[in-house]
Image (cartoon, rainbow, N blue to C red; front, top):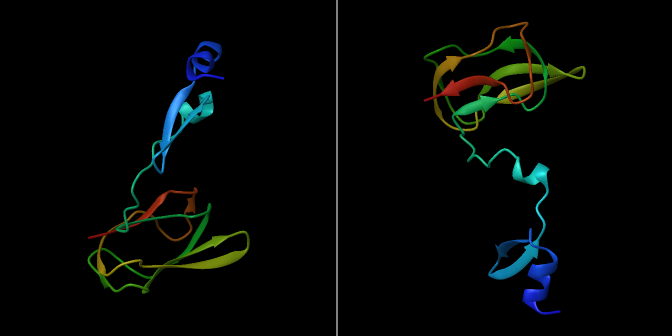
Length: 111
């Protein structure tokens, strides 16, 4: 089947280029409405799961090194130690002990 026949038969086909190989596909509405990719910001620590803040080890202005404990997030009866992914200084703590947090909620910001 020639490319013109395919385009005539499926006018909504979109062209994608993956590793320099061209593909034609139909894109779903769900795909078209998806949230765009955002580069990970290592200075913003978000909750990876919904839960409850049980303990906060840092406060604004405290210097932290990679791996230092920031807080404890309890989720599904497990206590998760949230540690600093980078060296830095605490810019702001957005939660307090006892807060219920949602998945992806901002917990701590580092400078």
